[in-house]
Image (tube, rainbow, N blue to C red; front, side):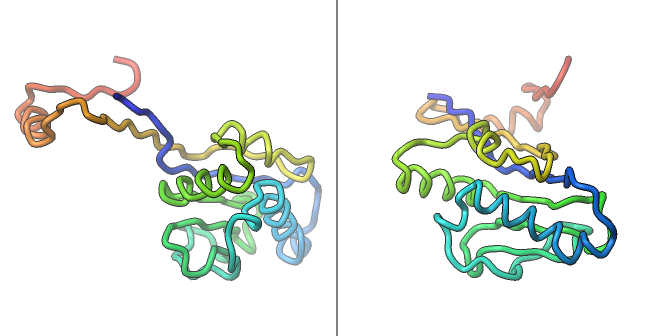
Length: 163
């Protein structure tokens, strides 16, 4: 069985409202974060959301995470550079836990496209800035050591994109 899935991904939220510099750090960024958390139901599924106890994404100065979580999930913004927006980073494990808890709580599966529909808001626009795809080969009798050697020796080629 070959199982393609989403590994990790990053969203960037941009405010659709006009605001001045002080409004960004005083309430605009935090309102966007709260809206995302409510719409995604993150606060229903996880506890202890507070100032980040994880490394913030590069270039961001203020961030939040679920304290002592066994996965990397972070929402952050830069207090002075509003054009950076609010970043939302899900590690593979965070996405897995979110999906597992969502299905247990609401008795329905969730996928990335479902999440993107759920978080839609007039308050912000959003885009996927990164998405890593994985492909698990389950019981396909692939010898990983042989595959690695074959790639290293040039007998097997990995291609990405147009070729």
